[in-house]
Image 1 (cartoon, rainbow, N blue to C red):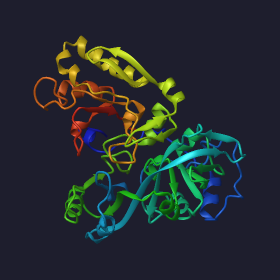
Image 2: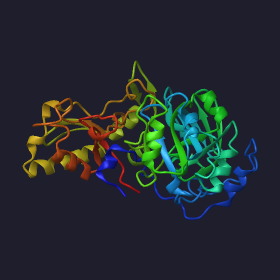
Image 3: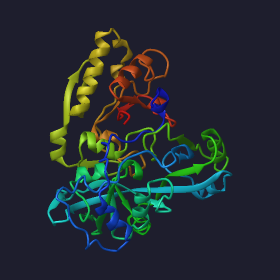
Image 4: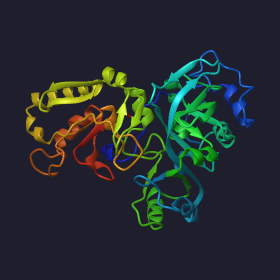
Length: 400
């Protein structure tokens, strides 16, 4: 269920529904909690078979997402446990792993970043690792048994990688992670890869981004009590409000973006800038003149979406909602300012339109006609975010 309110909330993922059956291989192999996967038998098709089925949460009404922009305040995850009515807290740390190479269980190379580049993967780690009561028992056991040197992939990540159980990920620091299982995206917050708490510390996956809380009360009560603990704006979402419990509740997950618009290799440059593999840029970034905005440079599919919106607005006599002088661009390969998360501008799927203009009057970034036309094409406005970004419009996946 989705309303316009959810434009300002969280939704993350356009990943496909996973198989309706559970392959016993992944469960048997991961619940043993062994340090290696030498007993793992490779499958003929590694990308799909080892998935845990995607269903509803065990008790969805009692679980809530707690998050804050950028990072949880120090100590908040521990203090959440002191709230009357809270009987379980699972906190996720998030970071980026830079992939150099991946091989499948047979030793065949399935990923090999160009020389000088790496492939960014969003990684998560959980405390406590098993997430007891939040996920199905099979997934709980898999997470609880995750050891250093091992990794779990989400279903969509496995499909993007063409990788399954027994595969290996080699990172830019020469760390190798062996894949011990693949689970539905929603059970791991749309992460691309899940690592052990020990590896998370060693690999820099240490930014506490969100907690998932089991609470015997209402969302409003939990939000009030959580905000009383810290000097920050704490957001609480119920299961009815989001498709996936994860951080960054106003934008698409990196996993969802890759599934829709493709994956690139990159390398950091000065400041927030990055350089993207030129082959990906040549295949995906397009410059074109479109109605109302003029020349734009975006992902080729996003160009089509913007062209359709602007053509519709112009044909309906609403050209006045666009201030062409306040168009500030689309493709901009960089990190989010002062962060290590990749901006969606790096994919060319976010456009700054009527940027910097007043929220009222001609050329407003919050003009209802403009916002509704964009939303109809799954391009949502940042002016409704909890941390508002007026004039920023980016792709947002439709609800599952």
